[in-house]
Image (cartoon, rainbow, N blue to C red; front, side):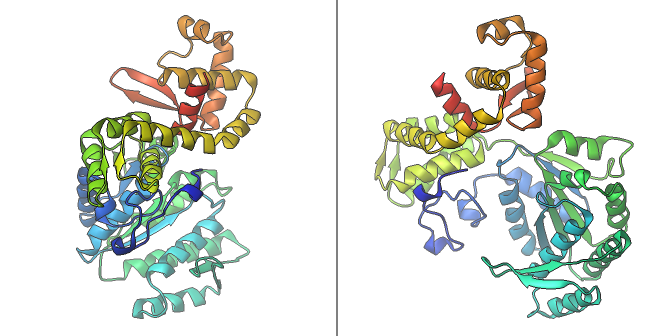
Length: 390
């Protein structure tokens, strides 16, 4: 989504990082802002046998937090295993993804890796390598579902036999609800409840799906985890962090410029990092409010083609409602007479149908604050573009 051509991406070592505001990946504690409370809780849960459900909006920094937690767990001789199952569509895909994630942590050159590879070979998988990264990939190709279930059990049993604590983070965990197999939740729950040395972080951005999975008394995972909601980093933490990263490299950024960044990006991790990355990449020694506003404008201009494409995917009513929500920033009563008349949205029934479609397409999300439930455009940059276009 972000135009990579304008960025200077960070490397894996702090010694070679050119831009202190990476927009993807985890690059060490020096470039990680705050999350101290969440980090302590996740580490404590992991070391005390408590599984955690980590929820947030998309691109709020869940993956970065997980890898930050893994770095802390390594100091306690615990091992983290991360897998993102968003692209998986079946139990077969899930099993392949988990096996690949384990193989990355325990490569063949290590003693445990040799044991794990021997286990894999007993299942007769196809071993290959990603053509871009060179990372190993595992693929099982069984004819019956029962064989995948047995292989999954074998993977968990292997991890359970290791001496140190192991924490598996499964990102976008709600994806399993879309698998064609109907017993996946019960299957995973039956395996997980038998584990004593392996614990889990289940994370995702579909809050209503995950909340139902872990909060519905009729679902297998009911009341099996502690929930943690990841909100924005507070301005009181993010503002000095941004200023510090500029000053560490003999640059300055004015306070009003930092305040604009945080307000314009809603303190949302990805959008804040993306704007800061763009600003830093200009090479300016003294950054003013005008410089930041120009960078923000350029970011929106870069993505206009994508935003126009969104328009072709929505009906006229849906697009008009999306613009209206962006204009208000937060909409608490989308069916109110005042809101509908202000933006000429037709009838309350039309608004309700369009709102449901926008929620399904994840163009809009529903959240709660001290004033109640509200609706907001999901993509902060899209919201600012719509706001600018009027």
